Amino acid sequence: MAKFSLPPRYPLLVVISGPSGVGKDSVLKRLKERGANFHFVVTATTRPPRPGEQHGVDYYFYSAEEFARLIEQDELMEWSIVYGDYKGIPKKPVREALARGQDVIMRIDVQGAQKVRRLCPHAVLIFLTTETEEELVRRLRRRATESEDALALRIAMARKELEHLPEFDYAVVNREGHLDDAVDTILAIVRAEHHRVQHRPPCRL
Image (cartoon, rainbow, N blue to C red):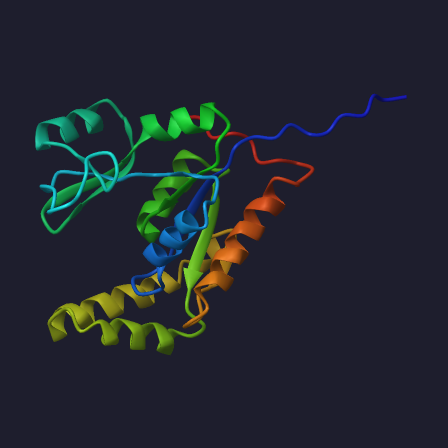
């Protein structure tokens, strides 16, 4: 008779992505407020810190030379140029969290999620969205923080990003006024993933 044993449990790399305006930052903030047992990824940037921001808490603040060194050493999971500054996800803190058995969660844009999928094919990719495209456009317009031209560009980009939904593992709707429902769904996804008989292989960085 074969000896019974439960399948091995590996820590998960969870990616929260989706277009601008769907509430990615709000979801991550609420997960932290609720004490979710994740390693929350901190992004590296070359922009200077704003008042009150702390290195290693809000961002890792690096000089252009330090950031270039991370690129050369292949120590970034993904990186891009945003409004003239470099932003990226350092591998080392993620690698260390996974090594101690802790689930890792990160919030990145759709293009960044595609890069993470190539680097770590078994990452759990969650697409955060609104119920309809029209609702997404309303949210972006309601911000009123940009010029009409910039807003039109952001809306066009968000519409293109919606087309990438089939590349993700899960879709979670963040309904207006129901943030905790979206957070509950994400936590349920993570719990279910840990109960798979065929667990996702670990991410090797």
